[in-house]
Image (cartoon, rainbow, N blue to C red):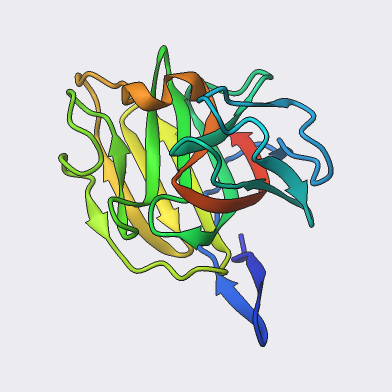
Amino acid sequence: MAALCAVALVAGGCRLISNAPSASGGGEWRSLFDGKTLDGWKVTEFGGNEEAVAVEDGAIVLDVGAGDLNGVTYTRPTPTMNYEVELQAMRVDGTDFFCGLTFPVNDSCCTLIVGGWGGSLIGISSFDGLDASENETTTYRNFDNDYWYRIRLRATPDRIEAWIGDEKAVDAHPGGREIAVRGEVDLSQPFGLAAWNTKAALRNIRVRTLE
């Protein structure tokens, strides 16, 4: 399948984001966000930030409120195994993670962190009690503000994989390990998006099952 592209609107013009091709053998993509309302989503009650979530210009905007953590949780069923999730995320302002994607892995959940621990960390929280800064999924890269990044995550029985654009950022084999979320994002389960002390925008959120 040919690679897809996304256009990022930034000051002074547009940037074209090159994207990795999706895997073959997948079902039809199903959109989880209509670009206009929070239909199918609820504001995650982390405390103090419930008024700091809005839909603007086709994106869910998580602003910085009274608490450090802000997010939304999907209220409808999603796959729990053999699926891909894809979205675009932007850090509008701040220096920490602008995409904390909590997702199911069978009967458990974990979180893909993008831009954490000061702005550059990528990883999965948590395996065997070790969070994204402590286990083998930890990697680092620079992230610009006001730039749309395409994020894709794939969960299959023997692997959890994630890409930022066309760069693979996570390739984990969690079989036989304890999979869990950090306590701070318990309310994001089973499928949610969050940002830490950072203004973030999220759009084009979709999922598909894999054969």
